[in-house]
Length: 287
Image (tube, rainbow, N blue to C red):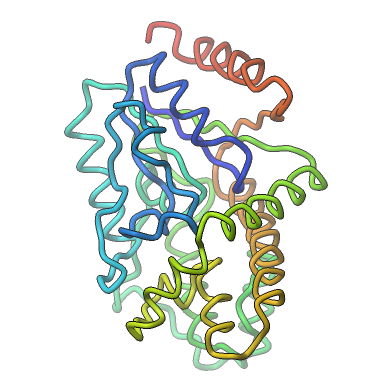
């Protein structure tokens, strides 16, 4: 049995994964692009050793922030684990939908000879094509390279994708006001827990790699250390960018994956867990 737990930050994915892993004697595989990296703990809300409760966890802390890691790498690593532990129940948990799609579906990477020629189209025409495929795209209209790359990738991986492994995707969700409040509080707690020092360590070493310059919680504090914004502005930007990212996550999950959504009862999380267990057992009656 392969279960996948997705959703935005702060909705209880980690707690659910531990509960289900104990019930179904499962291993857990990370599906969060930032939690791949060692020592990015506070800003990624990474599970602690204590929280793991001795359950085997994979693809956490496997790379240094100075090392490269791509969707292609994740696809290989995740499929290796699926095949290695084919006799075990497996739970994927995380918010990076593209990683999940690459691992579990017939997701292919564009080769040079497969690329379409868009040279006859203007930037505006390319952007219009991208908007038809993803109305919420965050690609800049003048970033021609990214526009072409997106179009080539989408042409190769059409929806609906073909499943390579039988699996269930469980999505945790809540209403927008509650989600945004939880995101804001989580960021405040990260600051209290030492996020500034976690980021400053890398800034002082002049490390400017993709996870640090692109990761939410890290790029905003780099801007603060560069005296581009005040600390208050940086923290506000972390909250704002986290909220915007949550919206993009929902767009991807709803458009690209077959997610079974459950509204979280934060006052009685066990009730939510029981609802999900009943759903799983209806779909995997013999597991």
